Amino acid sequence: MDEPLKKIEFITRDEYYQMEQTLAQAADALPQVERILKKEFKRMEVVNAFRDAFDLIGGVTRLAVWANSNPTEFYRLYAKLLPKETEHTGSTELVIKHVLPPSRLDE
Image (cartoon, rainbow, N blue to C red; front, side, top):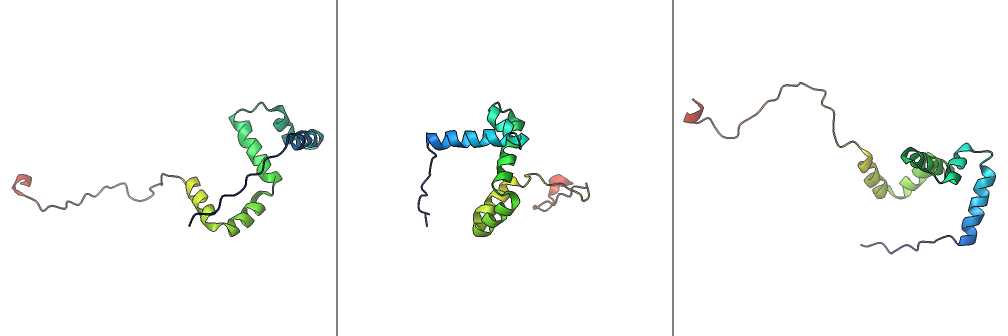
């Protein structure tokens, strides 16, 4: 069954400016907020911004609460994070088993 569409709530311009003022006040106490205010992100800064936002909204504890309520979606996301390649720690010998029996050409 299809899930009903969820309403996406956007913030108003006033709420955005209020948020920026709050971040500016927090920048003195939290150095990671200063990176957000500069808005000059390189790839690693974007990763750090997401890490900071993750921590600010509850981090691992909140993720665990969400995962408990949404196990299917959590496992779907978790599967995407798993490495696609596996390490082979066994023998390096390769054994090929032929399906067809030997013929006169094999003699």
